Image (cartoon, rainbow, N blue to C red; front, side, top):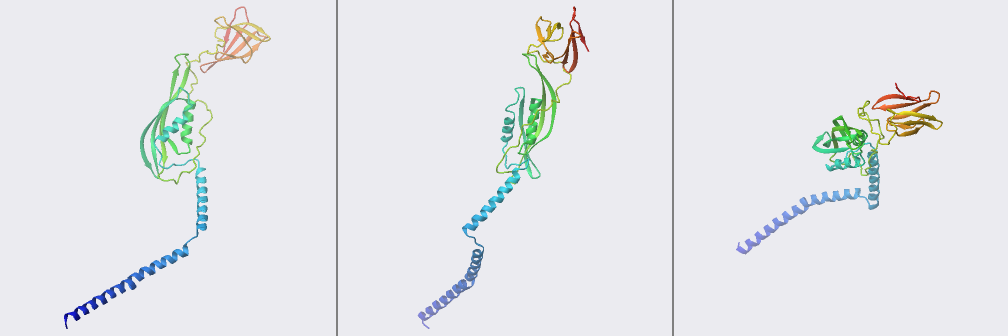
Length: 297
């Protein structure tokens, strides 16, 4: 067999081998993939939706989201997502904007920690305040829509006397820790945030002393009953003079320094005052006589 025939036979064998490999690849391997993809395409066609149906389903999902958001928004407290540290400073500044000039609040960031499913920032809140200002601050922290809680603290009394007019101010020193909570997701908050009502009514100052050494100064120039004299009783009231020689015309119910004129007795020719001297209630009677006397009970 000559060389030319041998080469021809070799080429035919290589060609047959290539055809066999191509056939196996096309009809075995490729056929399986084509069949699988055809099945997947068929499934997609069966489960496919037209545009209008998709829009309708989207509207239903949006309505459900609004309902869920409404339910969350009606909760008394929400836990916001990824809260800034500065937000609590802004919160306290807004609450204390209308506080008395005698009130001041200091805030110090302490740490950030995790508690079960939530994270929280911890702050130290301290300062001096009038009692009702402090009550408003505590109420706002505890009732705020975004969850905040006072963990521990202390309160002490503080008396400040105005150097100009001598008026005493009964204040409260406070120092407590506040935790401000937040979450890593938005499951506990609402898209439409509305703050709770944070303005409470006035309450009795439990730190105001029942008996006080400091008395309010007589800024209004009222009659000072101590050492006063009853000059005359007339149908319009009573003429009374104080130790400085000032004369006052008063009637029942009129205010005097530290109290009120409570009764004018024309039969006994006397007037009665009720005074509050730093928590001590005193009854003072002035009589119309040649020599004026004061009776205290």
